[in-house]
Amino acid sequence: MGGRKTRTGALLGSLIVVLLPKLLDDIGTFRIVAVALAVVVALGAAVSMFRGLTTAKRVAVPVAGTVGLAVFAFWQTSITDWRLTIFGLMILLVVYYLQDGIVGFVRSFLNLGRRTVSASVDTTQADAAHGDDAIAAGEPTSGDVLLEVKGMLMQFGGLKALNNVDLAVRGGSIHGLIGPNGSGKSTMMNVLTGIYTPTAGTISYAGKAIGGNAPSQIALSGIARTFQNVQLFGEMTALENVLVGLHHTFRSNLLDVGLRTPRARREEAAARERAFGLLQFVGLAYAANDEARNLPYGKQRLLEIARALALDPKLLLLDEPAAGLTAPDIKELVAIIRKIRDFGITVILIEHHMDVVMGVCQTVSVLDFGQKIAEGRPAEIQADAKVIEAYLGGSVGADAIAEGAH
Ligand code: ADP
Ligand code: MG
Image (cartoon, rainbow, N blue to C red; front, side):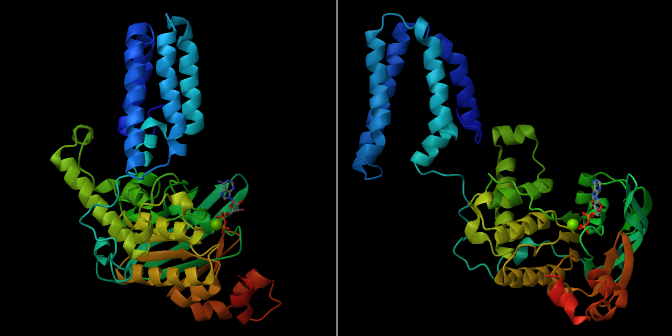
């Protein structure tokens, strides 16, 4: 009732539910509260109208309602019989008209909105060329194998989604993973990030075996991902979505946060600034305070990348980031992927747009029915007979991979 999105809202809601029966027990108290409420609302409405913030039409209902309640309070001699009715009407009012609760309504009425980006950040800066500081500087490109998968088998019942796959990804490279639909690409991502426990096979990352580790452990060890189907927190702003990715940087405990100690506030301000930097990096600074669900689809995909980068990954897995994007959006995405690599972050790119894969990847691995059928430089892959066969049934020339796979 108070508003589920804020702490004040939750407290106010509980207070109302606890105090209301008491309040409605005694007609004297009820009269005082009803009159006070009517006076506050009428005064608020008068001030807002005077300042030109609202119109008479918009405030008519709340003013009439609260004044009516005050009149009603004096008209009745006992309020006890009306308790349930009043409570029910309040619930209905909140459900129909105040979906963000009382606090949400008051905030939007006063145009406070959500807490926005900290004042020290200049939101007017152009996106391009900013936000680079937000990316943790990667280690120099070593070219050594960062991720090594051996003999990977992932079985769902009788289906071998991955069948004895070996994969070696070099540090600092963009490694393409392609293959027809259902060939096991997303399954590979899910195995690498610990969502599926492989039936057999080993994964070694930066020299350590990570097979069987929990997804959270793997994420903290520096492997971040995006999803084939965008998975954002829709009701949260773009900035808040990135803040979620930064949670690993917080050292404050529950008490710090509850009491808003200097440490908690300092950390939050730093995280907000960093999150804003990451939004700048992907060109989304202008949308920092927009709810994620209201962003165009292409921008949602970029937001997912920003959130993944918040984990300070050494390895970033992108599952079809260009799917459903328009041509200009794809161009922007490719530039961002290159920029990420230039910061020393290794990228595994699953993609159906062959021009993207062929344009940015150093090495491409091709899966078909869960098996790796080819691997090599993009040009070699494009000319590989087995790859052409897998994609097109072998009837068309190599050039058609680029066309046909769109
Ligand atoms: P791709 O991403 O290459 O299109 P996927 O990795 O999503 O393919 O799927 C590979 C195969 O594994 C498909 O046949 C799919 O139906 C199957 N598969 C994927 N995940 C599961 C699961 N959780 N349970 C059962 N079968 C699955
Ligand atoms: Mg997939």
